[in-house]
Amino acid sequence: MLAVAEAPSAERPLLIASDIHRHFEGLHAVDGVSVDVPPGKITGLIGPNGAGKSTLLAVLAGTLPASSGTIVFDGRDVTHSPAYMRARSGLVRTFQLPSEFGRLTVLENLLVAAPNNKGDSLFGALMGKRYWIGDERRLVEEARALLQRFGMSAKESDYAGNMSGGQKRLIEIMRALMLRPRLLLLDEPMSGVHPKIVLEIQHYLQDLRAEGLTILMVEHELHMVERLCDSVVVMAQGKVIGSGTMATLRRQREIVDAYLVG
Amino acid sequence: MNSYYAANLLIYAGVDIIALLALNLQFGLSGIVNFSFIVFQSIGAYTAAVLSLPPDSANGGFQIYFGGYQLPFPIPWIGGAVAGGLLSIITNEVITNARPLVNGAAGLALVPPPFSDQIDPNTQSYQFLYVGITAVCVVLVFVLASRVVNSPYGRSLRAMREREIAAIAIGKNPVQLKMTVFILGGIIAGLSGAILVGFIQLWAPSVWLYPETIILFAAIIVGGRGNNVGAILGALLVPVGFEEVTRFIPTTIGPPGLIPALQWVAIGLLIIGFLWFRPDGVRPEPRRVFEGAPVLEDVDHARRG
Image (cartoon, rainbow over all chains, first blue to last red; front, top):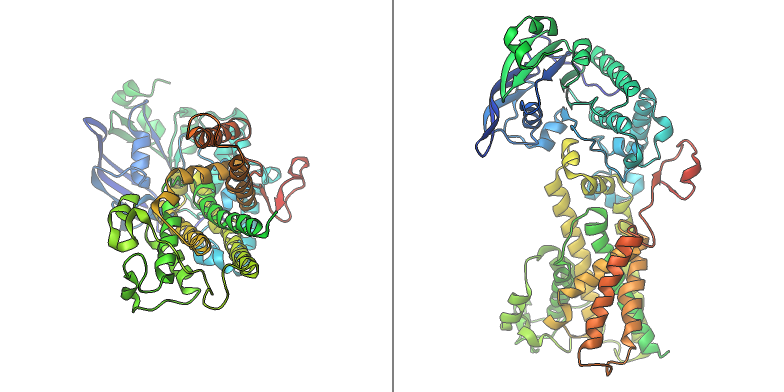
C-alpha cells in the first residue's frame, strides 16, 4: 500500500555490511561487524549500552562514515555515498532521540520528506505556485493518508515540536515512509514512549512488514523484540556475538551471560 | 519635512528592506549566520560604482577593462547584483590595500547616478524617480523572496534550519541548500548596495564597516525571523526608525564619541531585549495551515497556504 516501494527478490539480502569498523580515536565502537539484512523481514539489533548498535546504524545510514568495511545496498556499493544520497535511494534512518522539525507543522514534517516535488528546488520555487501546486496537492493527499493511518489527522496543523514523545516517534516513522523507503533503520523507536503508543507502533511495524518493507531495528525491550523481529543480531563491545531467532539465542550461554538476563 | 529628506529616507528604507529580505533568506529561513553579509552589499555597491564611472575617474580609469565605456543603466545595477552573488570573500583588507582597484580607503566619489546624462540628479523630480526605481526593486525582490519562503524549497530550508542531521536523513543535501541560498542572498544584497551607491554617489570602506551587519541582524530579530513582512518591519523599525531617531540626539553631550557608542549599546540592548522577551519578533514566522485541514480553535491566527 501507500508508502512502501516494491520489495526486492527474496534470494539476496537487501543490505550486506561486511567487516565494518568505526573508530573514535582509540575507541573501537564498531569492530569488524558483518550483518546481512534479509528483505521483507524485521531484523532486531540488540546488545547492552555501549555495544555500538547506534553507531552501526549511523554507519549504515551514512550519518557517520565507516573507518573501513563495505556496505552493499540492493546490489550497489554505497560505502562512500553521502547520507542524503542513501536516503534518496531508500535507505532511511530514524534517530534515538526525537528529531522532528519543531517549527514545522506535523503535515509539513511529512511533506518536506516527499521526493518529486517540482517546487523543491530554487528554480521551481522562483517559477511560482502554479508551477508546483499540482505536486503539492498530490503529496498533501498522500501525507494525509499516512496521518489517518497513524491516527494523527487531527494534529496536522500543530507544530511538531509541541507533540508528545510518542507522537514525535510516529511523526518520524511517517516522515521516513514519505520517502518510500526500501529499508527502514529504526533506532529505539519505543524509547520514552507511553505503553499505549508502544503497542500502536508495534502494530504499525507489523503491518509495514506485511506490505513488504524491510526493517532493521535497534531495541532494548526484549519482549518487543521477541514479538516483532524475525531474526536478531546481538552486539557487545563493538562486535557481533550471535545471531538468529530469540529462541535460538536464549540457548547460547555466552549471549545469555552478556545480555539476555531476562 | 523637506522633500530631499523624504526621498533620502524612502530610498534608505528601500535599500534596507531589500538587504533584509536577503538576510531573511539566509538567516531567518535557512539559519545561516553570515556575519560578512555587509560585504555582499558592499561588493554590489563597488561593482555598480565602477561600472557607472567614466574612464577618467578617481580610481585611475579601471573602466578601461570594460572597453573604456560608461555603461548605461541598468547594467551597473545588474553587475552589482551579480557581483554580490559571486564575490563573497573580498574583505576590507583587500579593498583598502588594493588602491588601483577601487581607490583604497579614500573610496570612490562622484559616482554618476542612473540616467544622470538625461535628467539632472539634483532636481526633486529625479529624487522621486529614484524612489520609484527603488520601490520597483523592492516589490520585485519581495515577490521573489516570498516565492522562495512559501515554496516546498523554502520548507526544505526551514527543515535544515530546524535540525540539519534529520534533514540529511530525509535526503536533503545541506551543502547545496546552503550554497544556493547564500548566493541568492548575496545577489539581492549586491543589488541593495548598487541602489545605495547610485543614490549617495560615493562608496568607501568606512561606509560598510562590519558592525553594519549587526544592525541588519538586529532588524531581523526585531521584525521576526523567517517572515518577509517581519523583515520589512524590521527594516523600518531598526535601520530606518531607530537610527533616524537617535540621529537627533545632540552629539555635544559628554566626551566625543559617547553618543555614537551609546547608539551601539542601544542596538545591543534591543537585540537582547527581543531575544529575551519576544524571541519570535514583532511578526513571527506564520504557521502553515493547508487547505482542507481539520478546523482547530488554536489556528485562527495561522495563515492558510
